Every structure is written in C-alpha cells, then in structure tokens.
Image (cartoon, rainbow, N blue to C red):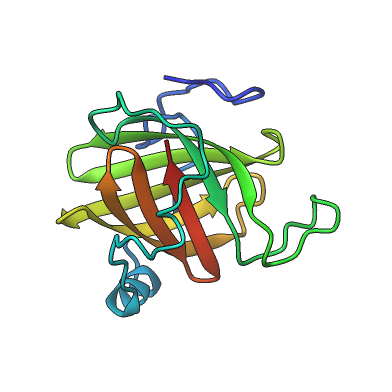
Length: 164
C-alpha cells in the first residue's frame, strides 16, 4: 500500500483499509438520490476519456495506485482556484468485498479525501467521499470503472476521476 506523505499511522480502528477516518453514512439518502439521477456512460466522449495521466497498461484490476483529479469546487488552500480548475493528485483504490475505497490527495498531499462506494454491478459505484482535511465536507459520489486504467466519477458539484 502506498503511504501518502504525512499520512496518519494505520490504527486498525476504521473499516477502511487506509486507517483514516471513515466516510460517514456512505449509502445515505443523499448518496442514493444522487446516484438515481447520475449517468456515466464510459464513452469516448466523456471528459475522462482523453488520457491526462501517465499510462499504466500493465494494471489488470482496479486495485492499486492511480492519478486523481477533481473539479467543480474552489479549494481555499489553492491560490487563484476556481470551480473550473482541475485539482490533480494521486489515489489508491482497494476493494474489500462489495466495497471500494479510494484514498486520494491533491495540493502536493496537503489535502486528502476518502471515497467509500458500493459496487452495484457493471462497474458502477455508489457512495460518498469525505474531505479528510476538512471532515465537514461530505458529498455523494458515483463512479464507473470503465477499465483498469480509467474510472469516471461525478460528485454533486463536478467531476472526481481516476486515470492511469
């Protein structure tokens, strides 16, 4: 498992494999309502279809290290940030049973988040993320595992994608 710089030690007290705070109520009403109205096709015209991260064609499953990016919200820690700007970082995805956990960062690892999502079939993921740096920020998220190199994602304010 990749350990992000400055990550807290794994205490074994959380349900996620990264030992950080858990996502509160990952399948709550807000997440399910968002999933019911969110469509991700995985098509060639999706914003995540064009390669924006270094390729890793050797990856054969969704588990492992990814590049991450999100937009749609301004991050007050980033100078000149706008909702249109992409915040780029790293991520690690781990599958445990029917759950997918993705720990990701941005702003040179000064900001972190965790997604907990239920795999519902055909690569679809439904859940929420928590901003670990500011845990008051919890939002619904829907993803689609298009391939071992691409996960298209949408949160209630924009995109949150993974690529390798």
